[in-house]
Image (tube, rainbow, N blue to C red):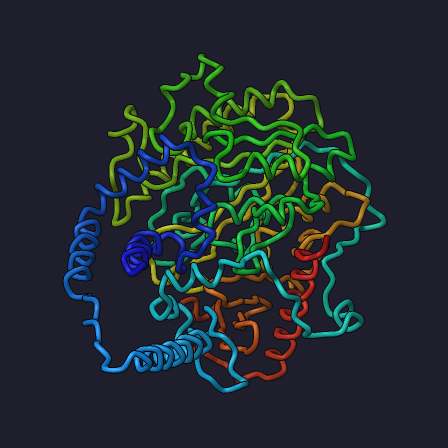
Amino acid sequence: MASAGVLANLIDTVYYPYTGCRSTLQVLDEFGGEGGSQMSVIILRSLIDNWYLVLAFIVIVILLCILIKMPAILKYRKKYMYYVVRTCCLMLSAVCIVAGIRGGLAHNIRPITMSNAYQYVKTPAQAAAILNTPFCIIRTLDNEDMKVPAYFDQEQLESIYTPVITPDSTATFRPLNVVVLILESFGSEYIGSMNPGTEGIHDCTPFMDTLINRSLTFETSLANGRKSIDAMPSVLSGIPMLKDHLFLTPTIMSKEITGLAKELGTKGYYSAFFHGADNGSMGFQSFSKVIGYNDYYGMEDFVKKPEYGGNAMFDGYWAIWDEEFLQYMCDMIGTFSEPFLASAFTASSHHPYNVPERYQSTYPAEGNLPIYRGIRYSDNALKLFFEKASKQPWFNNTLFVMTADHTNLSEHPDYQSDYGKFRVPIIFYCPSDSLRGKRDAIAQQSDIYPSILGYLGYDRSVISFGQDLFNTPDSATWAATLQNGLYSYYMGDYVLQFDGENETGLFSYKKDPTLKQNLKGSDPQIEQKMLKKLKALIQQYIIYMTSK
């Protein structure tokens, strides 16, 4: 068991820089859909890249075997003393174990959780140093058992916050085609146009920079999670990851969940989801069916089209290269009847950030982070997709929505805080409409689903833990994230942090993006307002997630 704990912690020294939080039981399920041979290649590559950790593990295990010895067997002069001593030792051990698990023996002490770490740090980012990975895994063993907090009674709750989004009664439905692109690891840090006036930004997205100039974006735009599996429910169903618990679990997957495909299906839309990995990868195919997509196109379907290169276009680790797969997607869209919904999840900008052989000299390693070349390659693949799409008859009648699944490696201080680690682009682009500029508003991934419906003039109420950005004033927009058991709630110029029981901090994130100056207690009125809204959001969320 000790060796397993050491192994988990060593693995997290590699994985933590990508997720920004300690791994929980989620990580075991996150890659559960990957093929065995594919995962073998990924694991082998990781072992080679991190050989020094493999060596450290071997040395630590050897030391454990040498240093941990079984105690000498005590000999008792009288037999009954054996039972007395052993019984006392057992009882004392039981008391110590219970005290360790609970954090004490007083009746008012509750078992420690991941959120307790925030009591002993100055900044939330330091909590991961106090936590350890085995503990986080153990604390999420029962991750499907969520208890509804009793912050408010039902009447109060409904008056403060409801996830029911009511449509504009005066709107007329417009059957525009919809294309949603979830871009692997495209954090805002790599996009120059998302950082005007910020020194030290490594701009890797010349095409996206030009596209943003023709699109609608937002002053603050955030992912709702830090893993790929968090993005799909947030973006396409308006259900963010607001509990330390994997969304794509059997219990949740069995719920009657709606989403963009199911709602647009009532208006006669055909829908398809595209992802260039194995068809079972990440649980995307299963979830796409749950929320109403008609068809799913993955690697197995791509290789049946030899004109795109077949198996030779597999990147050797995760999926088909973005360029070929997006070209395939564009051609497939051309065969769909309008109106349609097409969604895609790209893959090439994922670790290990390789590029195709023919692009090795075009996109060499650059800057201080290996991800830069991967982002630059995928940005070019996106450019080629739009160049091809712009020549198609369906292009001008289409709303394009783009975001990243999560952030990734970072070197700029503004992107290494609990705020920066969630900053991703949210882009609305419609060639035939006047969607332009940057709104002084807060946007999050879970806003995308209701906002698309609102933009189209959808006439039915939907459940979403986001907001319709097209029918919400800038001053009323908000966002919520969760990391290591700590909630962050954004409203106006402030972000409030809450561990489920107590407020832990208030920060002026626009002026202080690194979240160094805790303003807790400086403005009780705004703090109470934000805390009240956040508690209502959490309570409504868990009610929904635990209902049948």
